[in-house]
Image 1 (tube, helix red, strand yellow):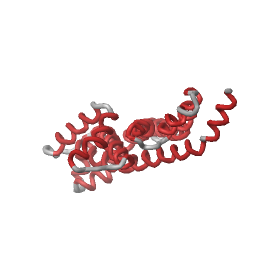
Image 2 (tube, one colour; image 1 turned 60 degrees about the vertical axis):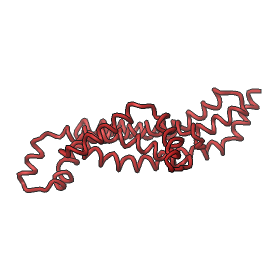
Image 3 (cartoon, one colour; image 1 turned 180 degrees about the vertical axis):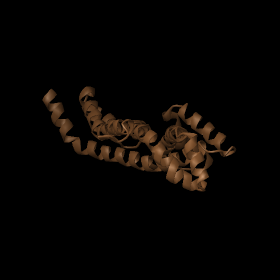
Image 4 (spheres, helix red, strand yellow; image 1 turned 90 degrees about the horizontal axis):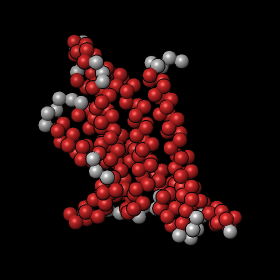
Length: 221
C-alpha cells in the first residue's frame, strides 16, 4: 500500500512543480517590490524627515506586530468592501510585498544608523550633497551591515509565502493540501512540500552565511 501511495505521489509531481513555480513567482515579485519599497522607507526612517518618519514607523510597527494571515485576509476580503476587488494572486503579492518592505525598512534603517556620524560629517565637509553622501559614503558602508540580514529576510519571505494558500493561491502548500485528500499520507505529502521549500531556501541560506562571514572579516580571504 505504501508503494502505491509513493507511485501516486510521483504521478502528482508535475502539479507540485507548478505549485513551486507559483511560490517562486509570488515570492520573486514580492522580493523585488518589497526590497525597493523597503530601502526607500528605511532611508526615510533613518533621515531627519520629521513628518514622514512617524507615519512609516507606525505602519511598520503595525505590520510587524500583527499576524501575516490577518493581513492577507484584509487585502483579499476587506478591500473589496471599499471597491478594491483583487484576485488571489495580486492580493498575495501586495500583502507579501508590504510585509517584506516593513522588515527590510528596519534592516536598512539600522544599517544606515550603524555608520559612524563622523563619516557623514566628513562627507558634508567635502561639499557633497545629501544624495551624494547617501550614494557614495553612507550606503556603501551600511551595506556591510544590511546584506546578511537582508538575504535572511528573503528566506523568511519564501516561507511566509505558504500563508497565501489560505486565499486560494495554488502554490506548493496548496497543492500539498489538495494532494493529501487523495493520498492520505500526510507525512509523505508534506515531506515533499518541505523538500521543495528547502530546495528554494537553501541557496539563500548559504548566501546569507557567506555574506555574513565576508562582511565580518572585512572581505579578507
